Amino acid sequence: MKREDYITWDEYFMGIAQLSKERSKDPNTQVGACIVDEHHRILSIGYNGTPNGIEDDEFPWAREGAPLETKYLYVCHGELNAIMNCRGKDLTGATIYVTLFPCNECTKLIIQSGIKRVVYDSDKYATTDGVIASKKLLDMAGIRYEQYQRHHKVIEIEV
Image 1: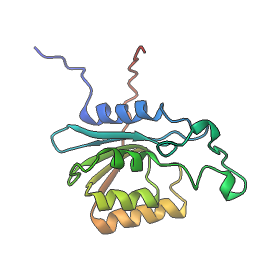
Image 2: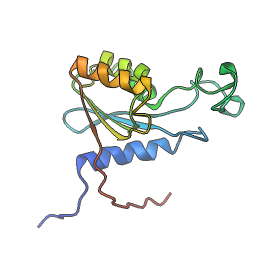
Image 3: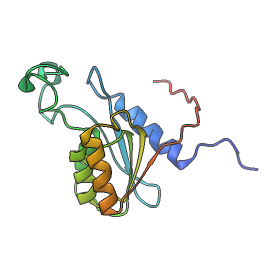
Image 4: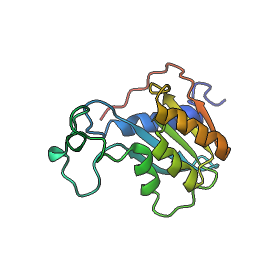
């Protein structure tokens, strides 16, 4: 008789996205992403952070101030990193699990990459122009998006 209390695919992949966000050095917002194919194979993961080769101790992590002194013009989002980490793999028909609804820039990358489903956890910026534009873009491109349904399971990982 097999176990009945195993986690679902959505729980598994969102859990990986949640764990990935813990690598982010951003003091305010940590975002993780996990891309999987239709056979439930992980193609890539990513989290928000500095571009390769840039020392994150010297990075401007501020949220407010002059644009050149904040993180916004410099940070790579988790979705961008996950897509770039695929290194040429075909993402057609894939699903991306993200801990925060994608911004409009990441949404354009998602569309261009061929990803066909977005599963997101938080939508805390739902009323912003960027997320409203993201949803319009996804709708026009025929890409499904759905909020992850939390099951409030606690899984401890000893590291």
